[in-house]
Structures are given as C-alpha cells and as structure tokens.
Amino acid sequence: MTAPLMTAPLLELRNVWVEYGDKVVLEGVNLAIAPGEFVSVVGPSGAGKSTFLRLVLGQEAPSRGQVLLAGDPMPPECGPDRGVVFQRYSVFPHLTVIGNVLVGFEFAGAPVLGRLFGARRRAALAQAEAMLAAVGLAHARDQYPAQLSGGMQQRLALAQALVKHPRILLLDEPFGALDPGIRADMHELVSGLWRDHGLTVIMVTHDIAEAFKLGTRVLAFDKRRHDPHAPHRFGATATYDVPLLRKVAVPEPAPAAEIA
Ligand SMILES: Nc1ncnc2c1ncn2[C@@H]1O[C@H](COP(=O)(O)OP(=O)(O)OP(=O)(O)O)[C@@H](O)[C@H]1O
Image 1 (tube, protein in one colour):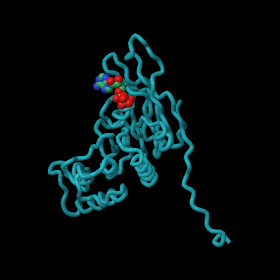
Image 2 (cartoon, protein in one colour):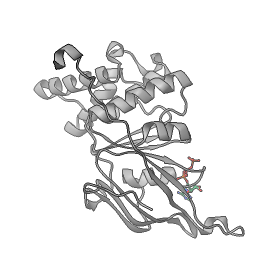
Image 3 (cartoon, helix red, strand yellow):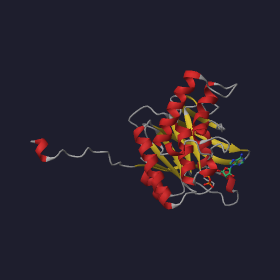
C-alpha cells in the first residue's frame, strides 16, 4: 500500500531487494516519496531500516530493482544533495563548531587543499554562521565538540548536514541518545527546520510517538512472511504506509477593530 502522491516523486524505490548471499534483508520494496514529505520509518530491530537509509545514501546498491532520485538512478556516492545525521555524534572532534559547519564547503570547494580563501571563504562563513544561528548554536561558534552537551552536538550535526541545502535529510535515530527534555527541544527544532527550509526528511526511529509527532507519513518495515526453519529466507518490506493529516500553520485572526 503506497500513499497517493500529488507531485513527481523525489525518491522512488521500484521493486528493491537487498540480499547478502542467501540472506534476504529487503524484498520487493516499492515506494515513492514526494518533495516536502517528512517520512518516519519504524519497525522491529533487524527489519532493514538502516539498510533502507544506506540505499538512499548510495552506500548500498540494491541486488534487484531500482532506486531513483528525481527520476534518475541514485548516484553511488553521497553528494551534497543528501545530508545525514546519525544517533552518535558524527561531528569532527578536532574542529571548532564553526569549523565543523565550514568543512562541507571546504570538501566541496577545495578538495585538494581542504581550505577556502577570499570571497569564497567569506560567503561560506556567512552561510555557516546563518546555519549555526538557525540551530541555536551561534553562541558556541568557537567551542570544540567535547565542550558541548549531547543535544548541542546533535544541533551541530544538523547544521553540518543542512548547510549545503540537501534535497533529502536522512536522520538515523537522531535523538535516541538524548534525555526526554532535550528530545522535545530537538523535535521543535527539526520540525521548524523542515518547515522553514522546505526539506524532505526521512527519519528512522524506534519511538512510535516521535514517528507520529514529527512525520507527515509513517512507514513500517517488517517481514510479511516467515520461515521458522530459515529466518534469513524472507526479507522485510514496507508493510504499513500511513499518511497523516497535518495541522497547518494558520495565521492569527486579526483583532475585531482591524477587521471592521
Ligand atoms: N553487510 C551485511 N552482510 C550481511 N547481513 C547484513 C549486512 N548488513 C546488514 N545485514 C543484516 O541486515 C539486517 C537488517 O539490518 P539493519 O541494520 O538495516 O536493520 P534495522 O532495522 O536498522 O535494525 P536496528 O533497528 O536494530 O538498527 C540485519 O539482520 C543485519 O544483520
């Protein structure tokens, strides 16, 4: 069952299988994700959720079927069109906060020296600083990751993932290691970034409440068939695909005097 799409899909999986030898991890996955969707992915441990993310990152190739990004075969390497945040901090410990955000520009713009100079550096710096402000880390600009709390490190990972304006943001249990209060703050932040930047988000989570709170659609991966004598024989697929009605931001009504 696939939710109806109003626009051309940004990401499409057509009869995708992932097999390692005779072990089937994913089987017959058909999916289309439109730009602007926030897709939460849930499912039991081992159901292939991270494998699905690796397919979208281009780190994994399907053994059968096709993965398409905006109608074209998925590029094998993860370029700036895809940003990713993992559960454990993926930031560079030897770089400051601003250095961690700038690094995306430096890899892309100066692959040999790894440094930008002059006007290009100033432009990158301005974008990196704006991104730090958007995730609430402007005040920590010159600190090192070891000086930051877990929540702040995940804010930094988000800034790093978003600064190159990816078409898809992939989140793999991004808040799993955080305390509940910090998690709630991060939910606000990610919802705001998704709305303000018009992002397409795919988030793997074990937290069903989080999946329904943040997502515009919840996908569940699981096995449809089991062979008790050979558990590896059948793979998982998208067994539930639930579109959610979202509250839309409605402007405050004007005071009565103004209406008159
Ligand atoms: N390179 C590999 N070779 C063989 N099996 C693999 C390989 N990579 C993953 N698997 C298997 O694929 C299955 C799915 O793994 P995956 O990490 O995608 O599941 P998951 O749903 O993300 O699980 P979890 O919720 O525990 O993170 C697991 O049984 C895993 O052992």
